[in-house]
Image (cartoon, rainbow, N blue to C red; front, side, top):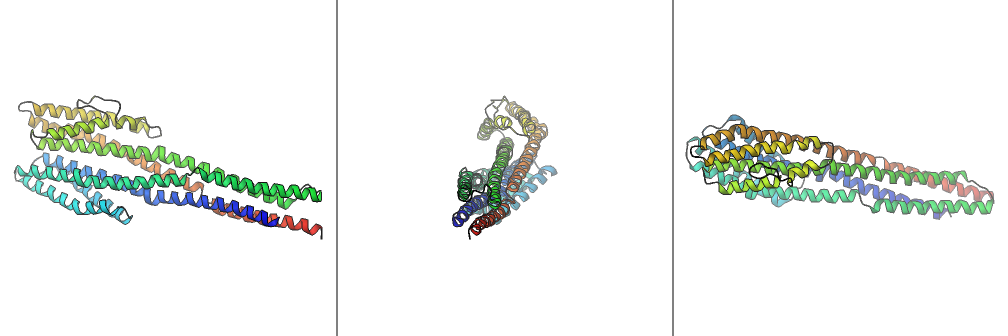
Length: 407
Protein backbone atom coordinates (compact mmCIF):
# COMPACT_ATOMS: atom_id res chain seq x y z
CA UNK A 1 0.00 0.00 0.00
CA UNK A 2 2.79 2.41 0.89
CA UNK A 3 4.35 1.87 -2.55
CA UNK A 4 1.08 2.66 -4.34
CA UNK A 5 0.58 5.85 -2.34
CA UNK A 6 4.16 6.96 -2.92
CA UNK A 7 3.90 6.30 -6.65
CA UNK A 8 0.61 8.23 -6.82
CA UNK A 9 2.09 11.27 -5.07
CA UNK A 10 5.19 11.05 -7.29
CA UNK A 11 3.03 10.98 -10.42
CA UNK A 12 1.17 14.07 -9.22
CA UNK A 13 4.45 15.85 -8.49
CA UNK A 14 5.89 14.98 -11.90
CA UNK A 15 2.71 16.15 -13.66
CA UNK A 16 2.57 19.44 -11.74
CA UNK A 17 6.30 20.18 -11.83
CA UNK A 18 6.84 19.46 -15.54
CA UNK A 19 3.78 21.41 -16.72
CA UNK A 20 4.62 24.38 -14.48
CA UNK A 21 8.22 24.42 -15.67
CA UNK A 22 7.09 24.24 -19.32
CA UNK A 23 4.92 27.30 -18.79
CA UNK A 24 7.63 29.15 -16.91
CA UNK A 25 10.16 28.50 -19.67
CA UNK A 26 7.71 29.79 -22.30
CA UNK A 27 7.03 32.90 -20.21
CA UNK A 28 10.75 33.44 -19.73
CA UNK A 29 11.20 33.30 -23.50
CA UNK A 30 8.35 35.78 -23.99
CA UNK A 31 9.87 38.20 -21.49
CA UNK A 32 13.53 37.93 -22.47
CA UNK A 33 13.68 36.67 -26.06
CA UNK A 34 10.72 36.66 -28.43
CA UNK A 35 8.93 39.63 -26.84
CA UNK A 36 11.92 42.01 -26.76
CA UNK A 37 12.96 40.82 -30.23
CA UNK A 38 9.55 41.68 -31.67
CA UNK A 39 9.55 45.09 -29.99
CA UNK A 40 13.07 45.75 -31.30
CA UNK A 41 12.13 44.60 -34.83
CA UNK A 42 8.98 46.76 -34.87
CA UNK A 43 10.92 49.73 -33.54
CA UNK A 44 13.66 49.09 -36.11
CA UNK A 45 11.10 49.17 -38.93
CA UNK A 46 9.64 52.40 -37.57
CA UNK A 47 13.10 53.99 -37.16
CA UNK A 48 14.08 53.09 -40.72
CA UNK A 49 10.78 54.40 -42.08
CA UNK A 50 11.16 57.58 -40.05
CA UNK A 51 14.71 58.06 -41.33
CA UNK A 52 13.59 57.69 -44.94
CA UNK A 53 10.66 60.07 -44.51
CA UNK A 54 12.79 62.62 -42.66
CA UNK A 55 15.52 62.49 -45.31
CA UNK A 56 12.99 63.12 -48.07
CA UNK A 57 11.32 65.94 -46.15
CA UNK A 58 14.69 67.56 -45.40
CA UNK A 59 15.69 67.31 -49.07
CA UNK A 60 12.42 68.97 -50.05
CA UNK A 61 13.46 72.10 -48.13
CA UNK A 62 16.29 72.61 -50.64
CA UNK A 63 19.79 73.92 -49.97
CA UNK A 64 20.56 73.81 -46.25
CA UNK A 65 17.84 71.66 -44.72
CA UNK A 66 16.06 72.61 -41.48
CA UNK A 67 18.19 71.50 -38.48
CA UNK A 68 15.29 69.69 -36.78
CA UNK A 69 14.65 67.54 -39.86
CA UNK A 70 18.34 66.72 -40.23
CA UNK A 71 18.50 65.85 -36.53
CA UNK A 72 15.41 63.63 -36.88
CA UNK A 73 17.06 61.71 -39.71
CA UNK A 74 20.33 61.24 -37.83
CA UNK A 75 18.54 60.19 -34.66
CA UNK A 76 16.44 57.62 -36.52
CA UNK A 77 19.51 56.14 -38.26
CA UNK A 78 21.40 55.95 -34.95
CA UNK A 79 18.45 54.26 -33.24
CA UNK A 80 18.06 51.81 -36.11
CA UNK A 81 21.76 50.92 -35.97
CA UNK A 82 21.50 50.22 -32.25
CA UNK A 83 18.49 47.98 -32.75
CA UNK A 84 20.27 46.00 -35.45
CA UNK A 85 23.10 45.35 -33.00
CA UNK A 86 20.61 44.33 -30.30
CA UNK A 87 18.83 41.93 -32.63
CA UNK A 88 22.13 40.41 -33.74
CA UNK A 89 23.11 39.86 -30.10
CA UNK A 90 19.73 38.23 -29.46
CA UNK A 91 20.43 35.69 -32.20
CA UNK A 92 17.99 36.95 -34.80
CA UNK A 93 17.79 35.38 -38.29
CA UNK A 94 21.10 35.83 -40.08
CA UNK A 95 19.87 36.58 -43.61
CA UNK A 96 17.83 39.74 -42.88
CA UNK A 97 20.47 40.97 -40.44
CA UNK A 98 23.12 40.56 -43.13
CA UNK A 99 21.00 42.55 -45.57
CA UNK A 100 20.54 45.32 -43.01
CA UNK A 101 24.20 45.58 -42.04
CA UNK A 102 25.31 45.60 -45.68
CA UNK A 103 22.68 47.83 -47.25
CA UNK A 104 22.03 50.46 -44.58
CA UNK A 105 25.49 52.08 -45.12
CA UNK A 106 24.74 52.13 -48.85
CA UNK A 107 21.45 53.87 -48.14
CA UNK A 108 23.03 56.53 -45.93
CA UNK A 109 25.68 57.08 -48.59
CA UNK A 110 22.99 57.73 -51.20
CA UNK A 111 21.27 60.16 -48.85
CA UNK A 112 24.51 62.08 -48.32
CA UNK A 113 25.08 62.27 -52.08
CA UNK A 114 21.57 63.60 -52.53
CA UNK A 115 22.15 66.14 -49.76
CA UNK A 116 25.46 67.34 -51.22
CA UNK A 117 23.99 67.80 -54.70
CA UNK A 118 20.91 69.47 -53.25
CA UNK A 119 23.10 72.03 -51.50
CA UNK A 120 24.73 72.80 -54.84
CA UNK A 121 21.36 73.15 -56.51
CA UNK A 122 21.97 70.18 -58.83
CA UNK A 123 18.90 68.34 -60.10
CA UNK A 124 20.70 65.00 -59.89
CA UNK A 125 20.29 65.19 -56.12
CA UNK A 126 16.64 64.23 -56.52
CA UNK A 127 17.64 61.09 -58.38
CA UNK A 128 19.98 60.10 -55.55
CA UNK A 129 17.24 60.72 -52.99
CA UNK A 130 14.76 58.63 -54.89
CA UNK A 131 17.31 55.84 -55.36
CA UNK A 132 17.97 55.87 -51.63
CA UNK A 133 14.26 55.62 -50.89
CA UNK A 134 13.85 52.79 -53.39
CA UNK A 135 16.63 50.90 -51.65
CA UNK A 136 14.95 51.47 -48.30
CA UNK A 137 11.47 50.45 -49.46
CA UNK A 138 12.54 47.59 -51.70
CA UNK A 139 15.35 45.95 -49.76
CA UNK A 140 15.99 47.29 -46.27
CA UNK A 141 12.44 47.49 -44.90
CA UNK A 142 11.50 44.00 -46.20
CA UNK A 143 14.51 42.66 -44.28
CA UNK A 144 13.20 44.37 -41.15
CA UNK A 145 9.79 42.82 -41.88
CA UNK A 146 11.36 39.37 -41.95
CA UNK A 147 12.93 39.99 -38.56
CA UNK A 148 9.58 41.06 -37.14
CA UNK A 149 7.82 38.05 -38.70
CA UNK A 150 10.37 35.65 -37.21
CA UNK A 151 9.94 37.22 -33.77
CA UNK A 152 6.13 37.11 -34.11
CA UNK A 153 6.31 33.39 -34.94
CA UNK A 154 8.35 32.81 -31.79
CA UNK A 155 5.86 34.82 -29.75
CA UNK A 156 2.96 32.73 -31.09
CA UNK A 157 4.86 29.56 -30.22
CA UNK A 158 5.63 30.79 -26.70
CA UNK A 159 2.04 31.90 -26.12
CA UNK A 160 0.81 28.44 -27.10
CA UNK A 161 3.38 26.70 -24.93
CA UNK A 162 2.57 28.92 -21.93
CA UNK A 163 -1.16 28.17 -22.13
CA UNK A 164 -1.42 24.56 -23.30
CA UNK A 165 -4.95 23.33 -22.61
CA UNK A 166 -3.73 19.85 -21.69
CA UNK A 167 -1.52 21.07 -18.83
CA UNK A 168 -4.32 21.47 -16.27
CA UNK A 169 -5.96 18.29 -17.60
CA UNK A 170 -2.81 16.25 -16.97
CA UNK A 171 -2.45 17.67 -13.47
CA UNK A 172 -6.14 17.15 -12.69
CA UNK A 173 -6.09 13.52 -13.85
CA UNK A 174 -2.93 12.77 -11.87
CA UNK A 175 -4.26 14.61 -8.83
CA UNK A 176 -7.66 12.94 -8.84
CA UNK A 177 -6.04 9.53 -9.26
CA UNK A 178 -3.75 10.22 -6.30
CA UNK A 179 -6.64 11.42 -4.13
CA UNK A 180 -8.62 8.32 -5.12
CA UNK A 181 -5.73 6.12 -3.95
CA UNK A 182 -5.47 7.98 -0.63
CA UNK A 183 -9.22 7.84 -0.01
CA UNK A 184 -9.41 4.17 -1.00
CA UNK A 185 -6.56 3.42 1.39
CA UNK A 186 -8.34 5.13 4.28
CA UNK A 187 -11.59 3.25 3.54
CA UNK A 188 -9.69 -0.04 3.49
CA UNK A 189 -7.98 0.71 6.78
CA UNK A 190 -11.32 1.70 8.33
CA UNK A 191 -12.90 -1.59 7.31
CA UNK A 192 -10.00 -3.55 8.75
CA UNK A 193 -9.43 -1.57 11.95
CA UNK A 194 -12.81 0.07 12.61
CA UNK A 195 -11.01 3.38 13.20
CA UNK A 196 -12.74 6.19 11.43
CA UNK A 197 -9.80 8.59 11.06
CA UNK A 198 -6.12 8.20 10.45
CA UNK A 199 -4.86 11.75 11.18
CA UNK A 200 -1.64 11.33 9.22
CA UNK A 201 -3.44 10.03 6.11
CA UNK A 202 -6.11 12.72 6.40
CA UNK A 203 -3.38 15.36 6.55
CA UNK A 204 -1.62 13.76 3.56
CA UNK A 205 -4.89 13.82 1.60
CA UNK A 206 -5.45 17.46 2.53
CA UNK A 207 -1.93 18.43 1.40
CA UNK A 208 -2.38 16.60 -1.92
CA UNK A 209 -5.70 18.39 -2.42
CA UNK A 210 -4.07 21.75 -1.70
CA UNK A 211 -1.23 21.02 -4.13
CA UNK A 212 -3.73 20.03 -6.84
CA UNK A 213 -6.05 23.00 -6.24
CA UNK A 214 -3.19 25.50 -6.02
CA UNK A 215 -1.71 24.28 -9.30
CA UNK A 216 -5.01 24.39 -11.18
CA UNK A 217 -5.87 27.83 -9.75
CA UNK A 218 -2.40 29.19 -10.58
CA UNK A 219 -2.77 27.94 -14.15
CA UNK A 220 -6.08 29.80 -14.42
CA UNK A 221 -4.64 33.07 -13.07
CA UNK A 222 -1.55 32.78 -15.24
CA UNK A 223 -3.59 32.13 -18.37
CA UNK A 224 -5.92 35.08 -17.66
CA UNK A 225 -2.94 37.42 -17.26
CA UNK A 226 -1.32 35.99 -20.37
CA UNK A 227 -4.46 36.69 -22.39
CA UNK A 228 -4.48 40.23 -20.99
CA UNK A 229 -0.91 40.71 -22.19
CA UNK A 230 -1.95 39.56 -25.65
CA UNK A 231 -5.28 41.38 -25.99
CA UNK A 232 -4.37 44.62 -24.17
CA UNK A 233 -0.68 44.74 -25.08
CA UNK A 234 0.65 42.62 -27.92
CA UNK A 235 -2.24 43.05 -30.38
CA UNK A 236 -2.71 46.86 -30.11
CA UNK A 237 1.07 47.33 -29.97
CA UNK A 238 1.53 45.40 -33.21
CA UNK A 239 -1.35 47.09 -35.02
CA UNK A 240 -0.25 50.56 -33.95
CA UNK A 241 3.29 49.83 -35.15
CA UNK A 242 1.90 48.76 -38.53
CA UNK A 243 -0.21 51.92 -38.78
CA UNK A 244 2.74 54.15 -37.95
CA UNK A 245 4.98 52.50 -40.54
CA UNK A 246 2.30 52.87 -43.22
CA UNK A 247 1.81 56.52 -42.30
CA UNK A 248 5.54 57.20 -42.52
CA UNK A 249 5.57 55.60 -45.95
CA UNK A 250 2.77 57.85 -47.19
CA UNK A 251 4.49 60.91 -45.73
CA UNK A 252 7.72 59.97 -47.50
CA UNK A 253 5.82 59.39 -50.76
CA UNK A 254 4.46 62.93 -50.56
CA UNK A 255 7.95 64.39 -50.20
CA UNK A 256 9.42 62.31 -53.02
CA UNK A 257 6.49 63.19 -55.29
CA UNK A 258 7.17 66.88 -54.72
CA UNK A 259 10.88 66.35 -55.28
CA UNK A 260 9.98 64.71 -58.63
CA UNK A 261 8.21 67.98 -59.67
CA UNK A 262 5.26 66.49 -61.50
CA UNK A 263 6.75 63.07 -62.25
CA UNK A 264 5.58 61.34 -59.08
CA UNK A 265 2.35 59.66 -60.23
CA UNK A 266 3.61 56.29 -59.00
CA UNK A 267 4.42 57.78 -55.61
CA UNK A 268 0.99 59.39 -55.37
CA UNK A 269 -0.59 56.05 -56.23
CA UNK A 270 1.45 54.34 -53.53
CA UNK A 271 0.41 56.98 -50.99
CA UNK A 272 -3.24 56.42 -51.97
CA UNK A 273 -2.86 52.66 -51.51
CA UNK A 274 -1.28 53.19 -48.09
CA UNK A 275 -4.03 55.59 -47.06
CA UNK A 276 -6.64 53.06 -48.18
CA UNK A 277 -5.05 50.44 -45.92
CA UNK A 278 -5.29 52.92 -43.07
CA UNK A 279 -8.96 53.51 -43.90
CA UNK A 280 -9.08 56.78 -45.89
CA UNK A 281 -9.52 57.70 -49.52
CA UNK A 282 -7.29 60.32 -51.25
CA UNK A 283 -9.73 63.09 -50.26
CA UNK A 284 -9.38 62.17 -46.56
CA UNK A 285 -12.82 60.56 -46.35
CA UNK A 286 -12.98 57.57 -43.98
CA UNK A 287 -13.83 54.17 -45.48
CA UNK A 288 -14.44 52.70 -42.00
CA UNK A 289 -12.72 49.44 -42.91
CA UNK A 290 -9.00 50.18 -42.55
CA UNK A 291 -6.32 49.52 -40.00
CA UNK A 292 -6.99 52.64 -37.93
CA UNK A 293 -10.67 51.76 -37.52
CA UNK A 294 -9.77 48.20 -36.55
CA UNK A 295 -7.18 49.44 -34.06
CA UNK A 296 -9.62 51.90 -32.51
CA UNK A 297 -12.24 49.15 -32.12
CA UNK A 298 -9.96 46.96 -30.02
CA UNK A 299 -11.00 46.72 -26.36
CA UNK A 300 -8.69 47.66 -23.55
CA UNK A 301 -7.59 50.56 -21.36
CA UNK A 302 -5.75 52.32 -24.22
CA UNK A 303 -8.85 52.67 -26.37
CA UNK A 304 -9.32 56.43 -25.77
CA UNK A 305 -5.74 57.07 -26.90
CA UNK A 306 -6.22 54.87 -29.96
CA UNK A 307 -9.41 56.74 -30.83
CA UNK A 308 -7.28 59.86 -31.36
CA UNK A 309 -5.24 58.27 -34.16
CA UNK A 310 -7.92 58.37 -36.86
CA UNK A 311 -8.73 62.11 -36.54
CA UNK A 312 -5.01 62.92 -36.46
CA UNK A 313 -4.43 60.97 -39.66
CA UNK A 314 -7.49 62.50 -41.31
CA UNK A 315 -6.09 65.96 -40.61
CA UNK A 316 -2.81 65.05 -42.30
CA UNK A 317 -4.58 63.35 -45.20
CA UNK A 318 -6.63 66.50 -45.78
CA UNK A 319 -3.40 68.50 -45.93
CA UNK A 320 -1.88 66.00 -48.37
CA UNK A 321 -4.95 66.28 -50.61
CA UNK A 322 -4.59 70.06 -50.60
CA UNK A 323 -0.88 69.76 -51.47
CA UNK A 324 -1.75 67.68 -54.54
CA UNK A 325 -4.40 70.14 -55.58
CA UNK A 326 -1.88 73.00 -55.41
CA UNK A 327 0.66 71.04 -57.47
CA UNK A 328 -1.98 70.61 -60.17
CA UNK A 329 -2.63 74.34 -60.30
CA UNK A 330 -0.56 76.58 -62.52
CA UNK A 331 2.03 78.33 -60.36
CA UNK A 332 0.94 76.44 -57.27
CA UNK A 333 4.04 74.31 -56.76
CA UNK A 334 5.82 76.58 -54.29
CA UNK A 335 2.64 76.95 -52.28
CA UNK A 336 2.35 73.14 -52.21
CA UNK A 337 5.90 72.81 -50.91
CA UNK A 338 5.29 75.47 -48.28
CA UNK A 339 2.12 73.73 -47.11
CA UNK A 340 3.83 70.35 -47.01
CA UNK A 341 6.75 71.75 -45.03
CA UNK A 342 4.52 73.72 -42.69
CA UNK A 343 1.01 72.59 -41.84
CA UNK A 344 1.44 69.17 -43.44
CA UNK A 345 4.53 68.37 -41.41
CA UNK A 346 2.87 69.62 -38.22
CA UNK A 347 -0.23 67.50 -38.87
CA UNK A 348 1.83 64.41 -39.54
CA UNK A 349 3.93 64.91 -36.44
CA UNK A 350 0.77 65.07 -34.34
CA UNK A 351 -0.26 61.70 -35.72
CA UNK A 352 3.25 60.29 -35.29
CA UNK A 353 3.44 61.48 -31.68
CA UNK A 354 0.01 60.03 -30.90
CA UNK A 355 0.90 56.65 -32.43
CA UNK A 356 4.19 56.57 -30.51
CA UNK A 357 2.34 57.24 -27.25
CA UNK A 358 -0.10 54.40 -27.96
CA UNK A 359 2.71 52.03 -28.96
CA UNK A 360 4.68 52.77 -25.77
CA UNK A 361 1.60 52.33 -23.57
CA UNK A 362 0.70 49.01 -25.21
CA UNK A 363 4.29 47.82 -24.96
CA UNK A 364 4.35 48.68 -21.26
CA UNK A 365 1.12 46.78 -20.66
CA UNK A 366 2.43 43.81 -22.65
CA UNK A 367 5.54 43.64 -20.48
CA UNK A 368 3.65 44.24 -17.21
CA UNK A 369 1.06 41.52 -17.81
CA UNK A 370 3.73 39.04 -18.86
CA UNK A 371 5.54 39.74 -15.59
CA UNK A 372 2.27 39.27 -13.69
CA UNK A 373 1.65 35.96 -15.47
CA UNK A 374 5.13 34.81 -14.52
CA UNK A 375 4.54 35.85 -10.90
CA UNK A 376 1.47 33.60 -10.74
CA UNK A 377 3.75 30.57 -11.12
CA UNK A 378 6.80 31.92 -9.31
CA UNK A 379 6.66 29.91 -6.05
CA UNK A 380 4.49 27.06 -7.34
CA UNK A 381 7.18 24.43 -8.08
CA UNK A 382 8.76 24.80 -4.64
CA UNK A 383 5.41 24.88 -2.85
CA UNK A 384 4.07 21.81 -4.66
CA UNK A 385 7.30 19.90 -4.07
CA UNK A 386 7.26 20.67 -0.35
CA UNK A 387 3.54 19.87 0.03
CA UNK A 388 3.79 16.53 -1.75
CA UNK A 389 6.98 15.51 0.04
CA UNK A 390 5.28 16.22 3.35
CA UNK A 391 2.17 14.37 2.16
CA UNK A 392 4.26 11.32 1.25
CA UNK A 393 5.93 11.36 4.66
CA UNK A 394 2.60 11.64 6.46
CA UNK A 395 1.09 8.85 4.37
CA UNK A 396 3.96 6.53 5.21
CA UNK A 397 3.68 7.43 8.89
CA UNK A 398 -0.06 6.78 8.86
CA UNK A 399 0.35 3.40 7.22
CA UNK A 400 3.17 2.44 9.58
CA UNK A 401 1.05 3.34 12.63
CA UNK A 402 -1.67 0.94 11.52
CA UNK A 403 0.89 -1.78 10.87
CA UNK A 404 2.32 -1.25 14.33
CA UNK A 405 -1.16 -1.74 15.85
CA UNK A 406 -1.10 -5.36 14.76
CA UNK A 407 2.39 -6.33 15.80
